[in-house]
Image 1 (cartoon, one colour):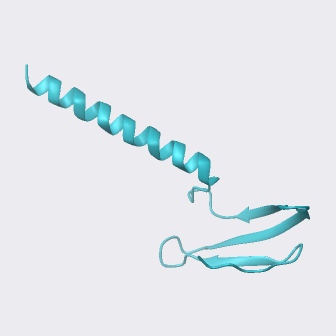
Image 2 (cartoon, rainbow, N blue to C red; image 1 turned 60 degrees about the horizontal axis):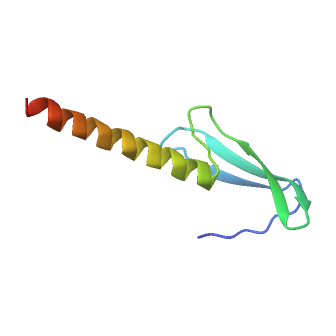
Length: 78
């Protein structure tokens, strides 16, 4: 994990030129106590999620795949 220190209104640029030919810019918007607000500029086609949302989406996708496998197995055995 790369850990970078930034002050309010300073940014971090993530160059994704190989994949999407654009940059992702992360800017520190506000620091309040133990919380940091970040602004993220990225192309619309780049999904950005909080970790807990990402994990829920993965779990949901895995469940759909398992359900589809079960349906295929049950359908082919008839």
